[in-house]
Amino acid sequence: MAAVAVVVIALTAATPQGRAAVAHILRYAGIELRICDTAPPPVRTTAPMPGERAVAVEELAGLARFEVKTLPALGAPHGATVSDGGRVASMFWDGVRFDQFDGGVDPIFVKRSGPPWPEFVEVGGYQGFWLPGRHPLGYIKRYDGTEVPLRQAGPTLVWQHGELGYRLEGMKSMEEAIRVAESLE
Image (tube, rainbow, N blue to C red; front, side, top):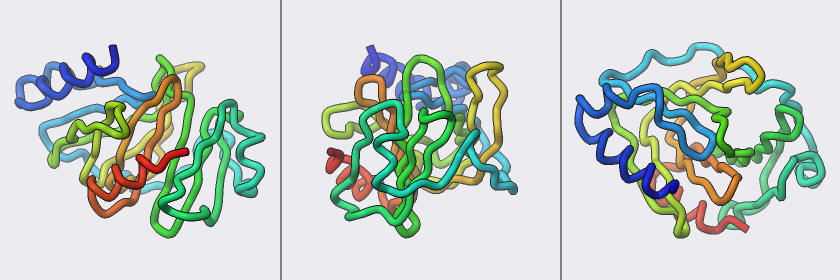
């Protein structure tokens, strides 16, 4: 089902008319991707996610609502946070952020994208997308659907495995991001 959705999205997003038709409805891996014909204005504020708090890396697995994975290709993370009552677990390296989250039916992150357009890719046999440019990132609170503007995000790889969504931000190229993502264990 997810693979079919990604193919439809990729074909539709290939034309200006298609992007206009699907704006505000591209949902995959717990992320709502809003594609526009022009680049969205940058977010000038930085806000934490709901309930976000720094934790010791070794405590992260016990605080998340799911099995926390690591990215051995990056080595040991320098820091970690947990958010939204354990729904989001994040790890940090110099200039790189890796979020793992309950990526079920309800989206929790919202991204706005204009040119350069997202590219749909395969990550270890799973569908995903690469957002090559800087873009606004927000967080959708489940209980009322409101959006919390978070920050301006850098190039990001997004993919889903089962009910978990993953976003890897800060890699210099799509190829490097996919290589790192495929080390997930």
